[in-house]
Image 1 (tube, rainbow, N blue to C red):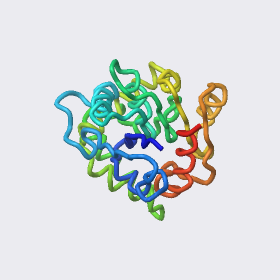
Image 2: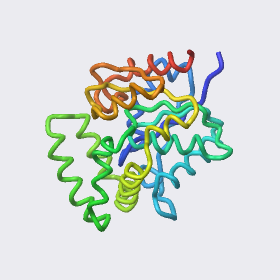
Image 3: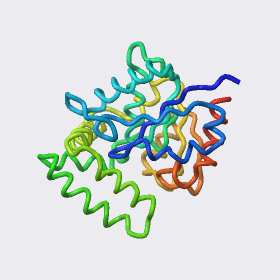
Image 4: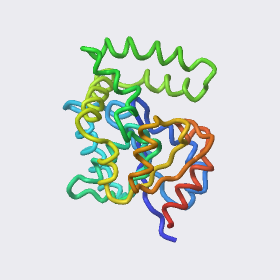
Length: 233
């Protein structure tokens, strides 16, 4: 069996450590999983503004470097992966979106960045509220810890751009135009508008009942099976 090379990128403020548990699953035995930190989020920030487009260009170049044709992308990174797959010369032809943004309602964290005029202001507002939300929730607590490590400027710039994109474009349509697409989700975690759009979109969707918004953390083996199945359909 030919081993596929699969890039993996994290959502807003997070980094590739969210995929660590997948490395202990059957998927990692069957295929080569390549965790990729995005600039400002585990990797050195870009020398230009951190936007969906500039991150997509970075991802497309890394896909070439690794000869990867598949990418797993979480949350807002689904837009980045979609744009990367549509970049000229990109080898990416299959986007596996883990509860990626489909409508403006999905930008529930990143979208608040545009309400702040500086990176410091957004970080000072965001982190305390995130920390308060995560009490008693180890998955959300881990996310808060990783967001605290992110570059504040990159975090704010990406959030502002995600809000702009969601208001002016359509994340779901961008995903649908990325070629082969698989959307993995737990409907309980998603806005009704996104679930409704998905049901009419024609996108191949796979449900993962009982999973959190971070299925790599609480359902790695079930997620591994779902990804392996869709890769070999």
